[in-house]
Amino acid sequence: MSFKLSYYNEYKSYLRMNSSLINQHAAYKQQIQSLSSSMEKSESKSNSKSNGAPRKKPKLESPAIPKNPFKFRWIKLCVDRLKRRYQKQKKSITLEDLIKSTQIDLDPAEKNWLFTALKENPKCHFDYEKKRFSFKPTYEMHNKDDLLNLLQDHYHNGLGGILLDDVNECLLKPDEAVNELKQADLLKTITKSDKRTILFYRDTSVETQVDDSFVEVWNTVNVKDITETDIESYLKRVGITLMKNLDTKAVAPKKRPAKRKRKVKMLNSHLTDEILKEFD
Image (tube, rainbow, N blue to C red):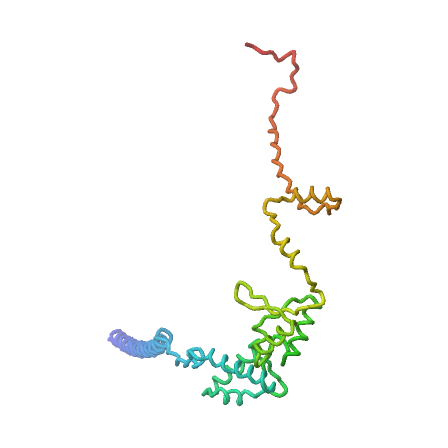
């Protein structure tokens, strides 16, 4: 009987121990499930942020300057206005007054663009101290006398002529100045194949009068059938010496590269002729 009671007590303690273990295991399992669910939620949120569609950046409206088709017309109007001021008043002007004189309606962004474009234009000069624009011509001239002095300087210094286009941008009435100098025999013009006219100073001191009869004889002489050898022989007969070594050097013919002799490896060179015999 005592044995049965002891066994029964042990069995009760075993059941109590197992039930406590079962309860602990159930609590632990529930804790693990709650932790895993919270971790899955956090991962899903992070994945939705990382894998989701990126936020669209707000499109910045492009300025109206590149799309405006009249932007180069603004520059032309301003440069023409500066050129007129140079021809008449020869005074500089601010950007605000220049815009008002050309009657252009611009917003602040367009004004900034025009300000930069005019500063970079080769026909515009900007005074950084006074903040004013002025025309920048190729040559500094304001009247007929300035044109004549410039032509004389080019003539004596061997600089050639001056384009009529450069004169037109400097003088208010360039045709009158050119015609007056032509009538005074101080200027001559040459028109090139591209229809651009060049002005030259005319030095009358080096011009000589030639008799008309000599000009007629000169024009009647035919030299089409005369070669250089004929002219050379004629000058020798008359006793006129010639300048030598003026002919261009003849180009020497290219020498063909010599064929390289092919090296043949000699065999049995150590054998004497007595040993080697030919057999027919």
